[in-house]
Image (cartoon, rainbow, N blue to C red; front, side, top):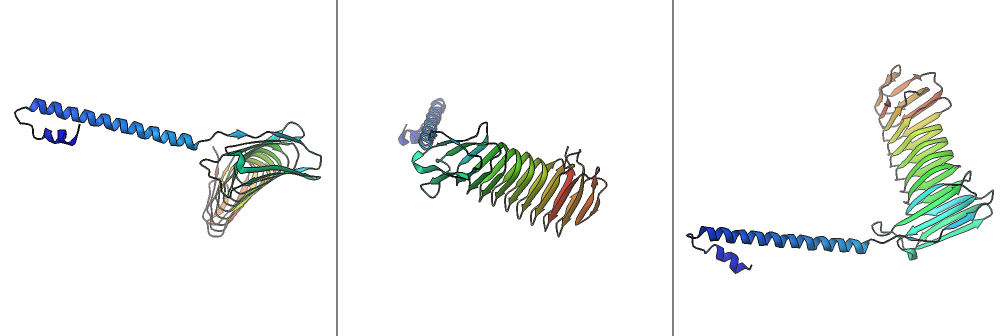
Length: 308
């Protein structure tokens, strides 16, 4: 069907309406079929482009490194995904999978008091759409673990020992930890759950989330919201502090604590019975007052309520 055929439709005699209707139907059908084929070709082209951009992960040879009694573990990994858990033995177990093996300088350095795992990328920035790096690390129980990163996604689970994580923009998710735990990220979000001990969560801009944590707990931020959910009871000390962001607290109905909440210019909403409240303060005792909750903000609002 060319342009002359289409134009000729409008030059047909009016005395032949049936033929005109048939011809118009043929044009519509052929146009629809042409558009369908164009859509199929475009889709195939996009799939081919995606297939070229996607790469399979290549696993590097795994390593198992026996640790001496006094050796701590230090991870210096700028980017990627880091999955850390506890090993069943006394060796540090390392696994790495990535799309471009030639782009990573991965090495292990040992000294008398430490084992240092270093991942240095041979170009300054990774392209997250094509460059994938995954680290799987298992650390023996009770070792001091230190992690330094720029923007890695860190998943840390089921570990008993002291942990110190420092990130510039990385996201930290930790659960079921026991010990002296320090999690810090300047711009990334931090989530800590089902953990106990001496727990410190520090940030500047990202969300700080604490759920079902017990012991001596401290969370502080400048611009990032703090969310606390769980029980505060006998022996617990919980301190939450922000400058210009809000704090959302949802206490378990089984909580047993004494609380003191203050804000310089933020609004307080303390929705528990029996508390002494003003627009800038909230004090009182829940249960027998076995634990302590201390909250401070400069201009951030505070909401306190009981969890379902």
